Length: 148
Image: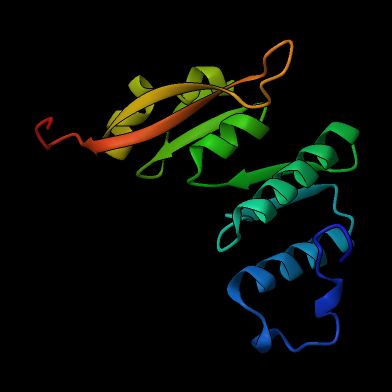
């Protein structure tokens, strides 16, 4: 519960928790079982931005440290690109692209799947020396809508 910042909820009934709090408690319960492979469906749904980053960093740490394999299903292509080493893009029950995030999380690959015009922003996340660049995919408009 410490890892998911949920110790304050230990004595509270699940029905008294918000969606994000319950999500983190469920994740804590899954981690406590010490599985060889952790399968997660939208593990950061209903979480605020700080908790999203905390959970993704935690999962990346488990995978990097060999504590357990981690497979995540998510619609958040930016967090997947930032924290995953390999992606499988699904559409209508079929795999349409696999590979490293830099090859899968691109407008040309994602636009036909999501039906939206996308642009890529390159952001220096730390403003350090050397710079730490991260690519972010931003939706602009539905593909069937004329540009403004």
